Image (cartoon, each protein chain N blue to C red):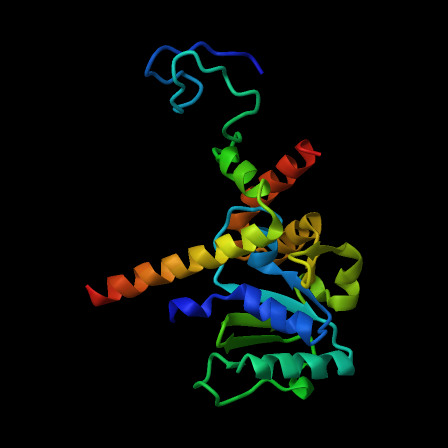
Length: 73
Length: 165
């Protein structure tokens, strides 16, 4: 993948992702061609299956908590 | 629905404890493969062997399961009802579970078994889940809007898995 220079506090033309000054360009693409954020997938792949399961439970509970709160407003 | 009704771990633990033969499919299967998606229920395809359905019935009773389209406790799951390919939409004290006799293309437990992997959640809990390529194939076949929406994420998850091998 060709490297793209970035300047302090700016984003480059290829991606809106901020890169701090001096940081190397990531070796893997951040986004897929369809715009999917591949970094999120890599984060979940780094978890164990049990951690993924517990994350799913926490997420479901959080969504429900927000829905219940919205109903009270 | 209460927040404590999303205990997939508890439901899976009861199924394993009761020695039910089943395959996790659907959204939670995708989650277990590492796909960053959101799901509200657990989908399983059980073996429809009569002895297994009896164990499944025991497990579902332990979880106080009932058909969620009907009032709580009104219609309870019974092994005799689950011998066909139909879908049983249940609610339990630990969350929702869909017991699916077969999924896309009438694929039942026997047909899906060669396309599964076993995951060890912890020392006591091993579960069988559909492999990711087959999960993608079944969602392509089903072709519902919600399946089409999740397909790009599943495909990228598979690509990332293969890239990191």
